Image 1 (cartoon, rainbow, N blue to C red):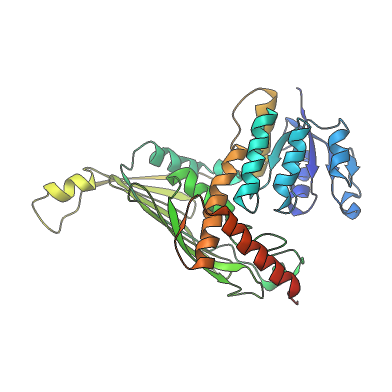
Image 2: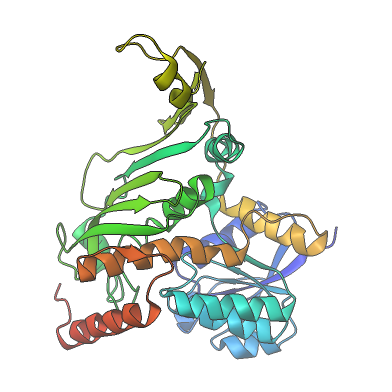
Length: 369
């Protein structure tokens, strides 16, 4: 079977993990032919691949058909655009970037290039989240009312943040829990429930750790149709919780502990509210429960990306969709910085100005271990 010749840019935790997945045979349509990292120490003892410390040289080598970008966040759009200019397909790690303008420019470059563009939203492979999307987007919950996601099982110690000078910095990562740990959940929020029109967010910066970026967040989102969403996340609680609850006028679903629980109303709540003859009764419900183990995720996304190039099949997440979750986090930051509502899309110029100010301040007063 024909295989995709893949290059990997960035051989840190994620890049090396993808490399190992391919070498273990978890992506049968992929062959890693080249890897690149500016640190030559990360390129040692890699058998069967060409190694580069210069991304341009790898892209010009003729050794790769596609590239997996696993660099620090700010470089995701930079490297992707380089690939597009060489007509090389791109699968980028999350987040799509740090600020919306650079991601829009990346998306425009992808569209002009005519090559495939995907993003590593591996949580979409979880069958329970896919089932939730099917229920909500298929109208089976009726008119959407509310999403509440408590996702606090991203616990990290101070040692984690001290393991790299770029970690949890405005200049290195572009943010904290919203940019590093929670992009998957932000993506699933909008993938299942849709994009809010505006958010009001409360971010606590360095609440639980010696860092300048946020490690505790509560976001409230409003929708054009009157629905709302509440998203709570942190890296400072143990034991953590991962509970997603979505309600509509025809019922409710809850995902927690590896199960999806679904309560279906016999009569839509809005109809029941105005036709019921008694004041303290509720609609009858029918209950269903789904339990299915989540796959490993990362290799599934990479394999689907390769097959989309080789056979024209669908990939799991198009790269252009990365702008959606980033738009939510950009709006959350701007809301917290201005202590006000932030519309989506955000005021990009103001966002970039505030981010630059924080990066400058951080550089002048670096974090001490």
